[in-house]
Length: 162
Image 1 (cartoon, helix red, strand yellow):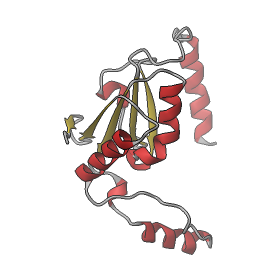
Image 2 (cartoon, helix red, strand yellow):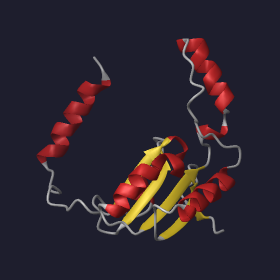
Image 3 (cartoon, one colour):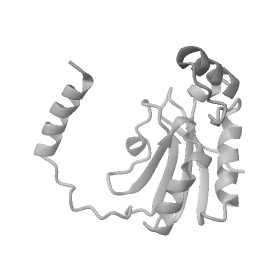
């Protein structure tokens, strides 16, 4: 038995009382959030959002450069006007380098991953500032951009102003 059996059962319960099929495609609050894929982050609860309020774009580390394609679609096609970058404490991206993961892939899979930028970082706050700068300097994304660190230990977000 795999986890998918549990997921399917949970979905059946969810769908039985589902009432949000009427929500429009564009997010109500015209907001796009870029954050980490870390399973400890419940973006909607942490930021007081509901389904339909915002696009949430997740990837390892919450890196804006990897999210650029989604941000452009979010703004140009779906009307978002503001971008929020959220990285977090105790992030796995602080624990390795590109060289480390490339060596692991070579050892475990026998494959060459030298063409992939994994985008790890050594300084959490600086990674947020870098990503905020990246989005602000992009000619493909417009509007307000702010950055935060989510503290996995407390559930709080701390704004990082430039």
